[in-house]
Length: 163
Image (cartoon, rainbow, N blue to C red):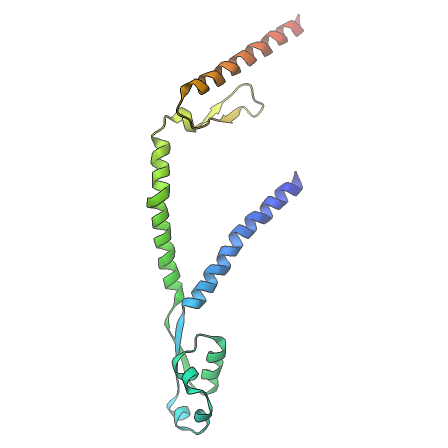
């Protein structure tokens, strides 16, 4: 039992860990920054030795950022991917709510409560059983009738043992 629970907990931890990795990678990928060279560095002869196409326009990658800072420039972020990922997350959540969850809740509410709530069953040790969602009442009646028959059988055996 403990090994099985440990396995399930490990799988649950992976389920909560992997999305974080991809979301944080997406934040980094969607962030954009630009290198602004200093006026002193752009007029000096040493700046001509640097690859100006990489230094001036983009410093999102660590290599370009280091090159920009080495040349005396400054790297400024003009688009933060965090806000883009937040907006996308809100949109996906809203689509799931209105497209799927709202319909599922309405569908469950359209059925009578005895079809989807937990019912007390005296024949089970746990004393609770989940009632299945179905549209015919015959199956539910046969289940309750069988439960009554089992209870009567148990009571009759108990009375025979007492006498």
